[in-house]
Figure 1 (tube, rainbow, N blue to C red):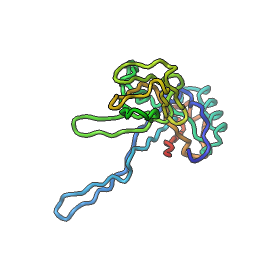
Figure 2: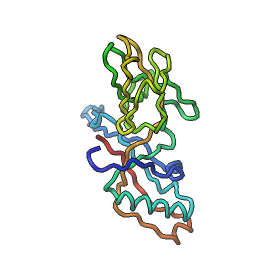
Figure 3: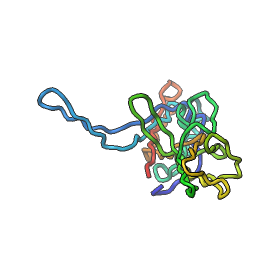
Figure 4: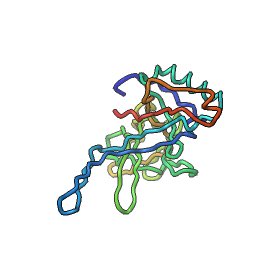
Length: 213
């Protein structure tokens, strides 16, 4: 990350009730014949959330305030668990070592970046996974799971290093399964809290934005 990052997780109770998701930026130009051209300005999606929708009580308000203060508003980033998309496998399915292909062996390379691919018959896009969950990564080579001692995971970058004795052979398919968080920061330096309004059913807006490298 280009600026300060605290390797702490936003309270799960609040993140599970958050709203938001991926966004993209597309330029659309209308043509004189009624058609249009489209151009993607961003190579990757950037995720935004409103964590205010996860607030349920006074304890949640205090927990949010304390977390916001500890991050000094927008100054420090932190981990956030997307309520829907937070693992290599689809929701409610177990993570396995063959969930996502992360590379192909060449007989010497032992360093692989965790990635997640979203695809269907029409197309595909690949996303770097830089904040895997602690002790969540499982690895396989050609479908055979490796022992945890046969690889090391950098949980700050999502890089996986295979031990020398397990170096993937030429053409070997390297796959991984994992849980992951998203690096985000608060997208405001001020949170407006009214206890009276909260008791009446109004929740404060708590915008979060994904931090891109």
